[in-house]
Length: 235
Image (cartoon, rainbow, N blue to C red; front, side, top):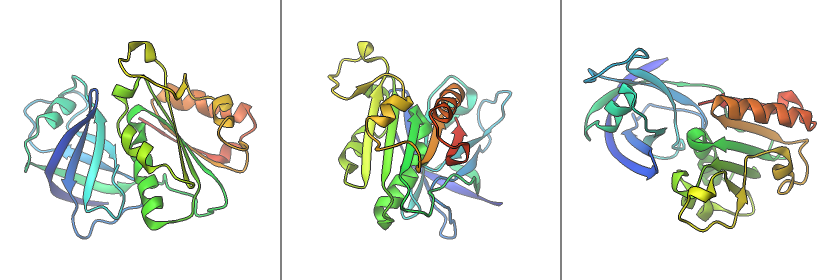
């Protein structure tokens, strides 16, 4: 596993309590869309019991000339140190790691189910597929509380095409000041079947909080999806 130091190039608030951090990408750094890195803060001002390292999915695609990570902000020492990191500061990265990646069989629909910032590795996979024109047919079901809290929402909306179907859904529109004409409620097999010809013969990628991943995995299996066709990653 390779280890190196990289500098922070940019940081941006992309939704309520969610930020992206853009780091320089070493010339010899190669990764597969969907993989992650271990990011370590160097001499942070504060520390907590979990230490100063975290696994973080690479949200940028391999062709992009930077490494992008996405996180939901919190009061943890790591998140606070990361949020306050000055541009030009160095961090250490190790990787790439992980095996979450697109199936090479382009005849099978790729159905991505994301909860909140769990969309990070899926952004990488989608941008890779679009840029490389891989031919995959991708469906992204993206669950957030409300539009204000959904990172990359407008980017995915603009990216829609015959090969990329975007289905965002909101669970707490009663707390939003925006209008919404899309799906509402949690992702479930019934919602998926409204947009997908059939559940079988597809590859499923579920990324999000533990309960989100557990519930969706179980409900898909109960609906007839083979367990081997479901890949998961917990955030």
